[in-house]
Length: 378
Image (cartoon, rainbow, N blue to C red; front, side, top):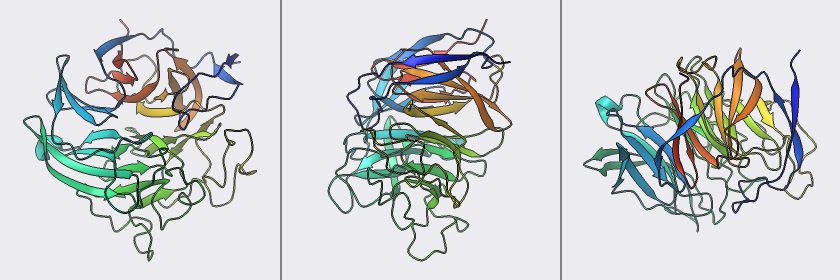
């Protein structure tokens, strides 16, 4: 029989309350036998980053790192070089310079992809934009905006935004509901609260679920999301997995399917930050149940599957950053389901991004610190 630990967690103060669910005192059930089998440790790879929102590797092993404040860096042998030529980035609440991803065939075509908050277009404020560009002599060139959410909003919350490619090189990205809970997520004629799917040049695939729906945002692939800040292709199944912030409780992990409605805000396992309810429903016909959810919220950001054999018994499992509780969450995946979890490296700081490197090791960024690597056991 598995033994369960009850961990009483005190709220953690935070300046960004639109992301953090800080006023909750609850318990978490943690599986003590959660498939670790060893005592993982970590080491600092590169320091001096404030909010390293996203990072990825160039073919030569250099890192590209986005700073939310609107700066992009190339890191080579621990030395940072700032990349010039970024578009105008609107730093607004949770928005700024966000995710970065290379094309699967980057070595042949040199395309890289970035999401950022942009004030271009209609309305005051900003919304999430997706662009692609090439890197030439430490400058971005050949820039093309592939998608821009609209209208702009002066609200500071829920920009999303992660980028992923599937096995067929379709491009997925997320935009949060932009703080318009009752307006955007359930409406396929509006941006916000969605997962989008494009061809790598920004064209909309004709087999997108709403391609032939008059007036719909035809780039939408799924809807009913709150604020997805994690997205990754499962390397074993090819499916796109996401996680998203709930309000006070109800963070979710989902496997994205075309045209599906993931329920926000009609169904949820969370409540308002002031403790009141906004819905009495946790399930409804025609809306998807989460694969996994967290009560209390961990405020998830970034996620990575372990595809290699560097860590004992972790192959196929999932690692998720926690902004609220300052740890990395290990999720044991069996038969395409999360069956247990365990926090790692508690109190390390707000974990923003998680990636598996080309060396098969897991890297994660911590706000106000830098990028760390989980050591392979000796």
